[in-house]
Length: 327
Image (spheres, rainbow, N blue to C red):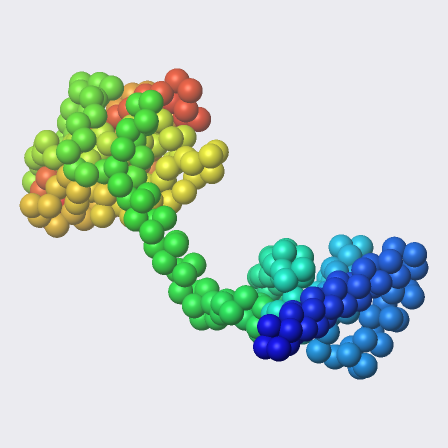
């Protein structure tokens, strides 16, 4: 008798499963024959048989197709909201419907991707109400909370920070220096004679003014040569250090931070840069007739000097000069 009851119960269960699949097939046929009729039938199932997942699956799928066909963002948003709501009910009531498992997982994955993408778009446009609603749908469907705006800002700040730190790491690629220098770089001078001539011209005028002569310093010279070479090979003209990355100039660091990588004995107090002139005399005249550059060359408190000159035929100006002093 017990065995007979067991067989009867199995038969009832099998019939129930077949019944579920028959409902799914019926909905499938209705949608294939007439999409509008299928939609109406699926909507009726929501009120009459609200715990059946089949109708929700077909409605979610229909709204996904509508999402793909819409061009305007607000209409896409509306279709995605509906698809997510129907998919949530499908997931809620489809736990024991094995035949829906793969279809359910597939449509939830697709909706989740769209929810995240649209959420990011509305965040970009600072529409926080819509972005939060999409994030809520995402959490209900996947069980995962998307990061809040504050968390996203923090993540982006950290990404930028890490990217900047990577830019600070010195390296040499095809003869070009990238990142902030370590201070160990030794760039060969294009012309030591021209560098000495620049210092000679400056000191002649300093003597005429009754000032102490500037003393040549090896490490200040290394700093000047590095920057002259960097401007020439990277194709820029600026006191700050730049790298050319994918054709764009990216600022790497400031003037005195760069100089102090080479020279940290005393206070560094000036830098002059010039470009385009081959001779020390022409470059000296450029600086002599510029108020700020003139003040740097004839600052009475300066004691030590470094001068660097670099040449690159493929650069915008050819010749690049750098002068820096310390007290």
